Amino acid sequence: MRLEIPRGLIRDWELADAADLAASANNRKIWLRLRDHMPHPYSVADALAYLQRVAENESNQSFCLEVDGRAAGAIGLRVKEDVHRYTAELGYWLAEEFWGCGIMSAAVRAFTAERFATSPLQRIFAEVYADNPASARVLEKAGFEYEGRLRRNVVKDGKTLDSLVYAVVR
Image 1 (cartoon, one colour):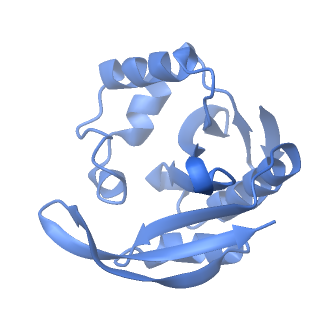
Image 2 (image 1 turned 90 degrees about the vertical axis):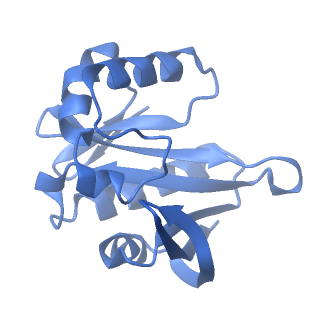
């Protein structure tokens, strides 16, 4: 994939992204907003292991968000199965230095449009932690609609949190 957005590019990951990925991802504020499968601290070894898994996965739906010429975040989908096979969950993160610049809203908007245009997906949704209003705003700016609150849905860093569900449909 190669999809241009303002100030950046959504593209396939490369093993050469490991150092930039580790530098961008090794941030507790980012880790607090993501699922626990992303380690913290985040090392170059973690980045290399992740990039190797992505390279070996033929159905990879995880992409690099390049900003100012370096790997500064990620965006991707997890396509569901069985009766949910035309539904995918969106995930994303961005290096803190680029927060509040509109980059992620533009990336989410462009990425979801491209996925709808090139796949049979009918629905893309995202769950954000209720204590992360900036991420909810990213989704709203990208055209996602609020669908509801999942109460006491996740445990992150020892805290039980609600999740907010947003979705966009074809």
